[in-house]
Image 1: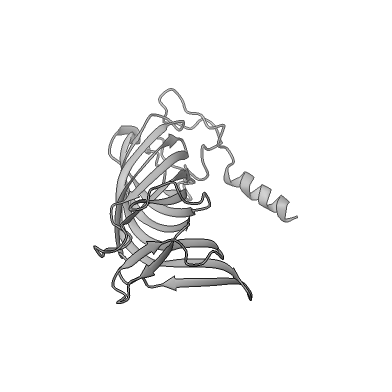
Image 2: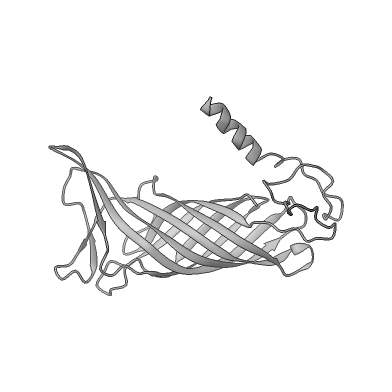
Length: 248
């Protein structure tokens, strides 16, 4: 029963993604189907014919998370997954919204499944990185979440079957960050979490880009700030690559 309900919800979410059509001008919807869930929703009243279409207002970035710097990228476990939720205003700058601005709010969750161990110096001033002290470690994670204000310049071709390119950046606040070690011991499975890195960088800022078709896009982002700000700390910058789905 639960499987049937899930299938119905997924069907409703993506209904119409293959059948929308425009006239030769690309401005009038001549099919009752939509190219993406709620893309053309305008409220209780129908939109005017000349109303500029807006896209990419609710976007989800499904990401593989990694880092660069003192430790090389793409050496961590594939299960280093994360999710960015973006609620954006789409602001047209040109006719038919072929060029526009996007600005809004973002909540980001990152999770890096790595092979080392973070530890503080004896005075708890900076953060270092080494191999695990114990061979019993089954999983070691660095995880956290943040809130940001993203902004981007958007380019699109004509029509709902458009190709799009987003180039932008963000500035925000690292709400928390912690290390999690799962190990096996004499008493069974043990989970230890370490919060409150002494030199955690709470100010975050970075750049990102998307390129895709309709409501799907490839996504890449790079944080210009290091995870830890002390000069003696290991220098790591967050990297994300993945896929973006636009629902509205």
